[in-house]
Image (cartoon, rainbow, N blue to C red; front, side):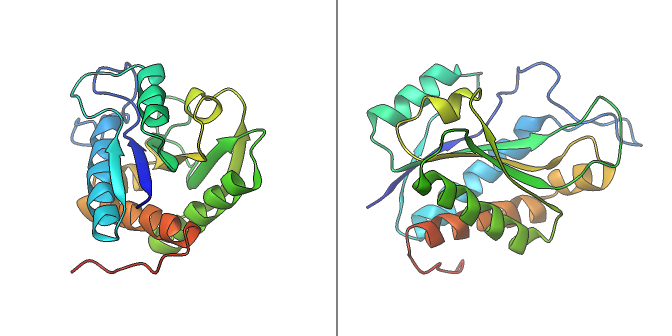
Length: 193
């Protein structure tokens, strides 16, 4: 049984990780999206026969080093970090979904990033910003397994911010990531019962 490490991105206390004020003056913190998608993803993965490891199940900010150590100690098969993107501080037109992999990634990591990105775009219909590379993101350069950091949309784009706080979109993102993982492991995706 494959083990999938799920990282729900930033904790509630991470400064600045939120939308600008919506017209009704409310805001959405990034972790509201991250946590919901992680929970839905965990459920979908289990229903598809995977073992799930939540690397930051606590309600406080867990250091990146701890998250990665937990995944490495468990010998997880892949690592998925869930995030919502931002550009600047106010509302703007930048939009879309992108996935990040380690800059010196092997072919397996490249394939995982490609499968997840394609399935997310297929499920959500959002703009495809592609698979990007970084050598600086700790959860990508310090994990011992293929790792992908997913940015499910921009909190600074009003249309996408509304989606990011909707339950329907959060579920679509979880399904997309799950379909990408199933495809990576050549496992037929089982629809939700």
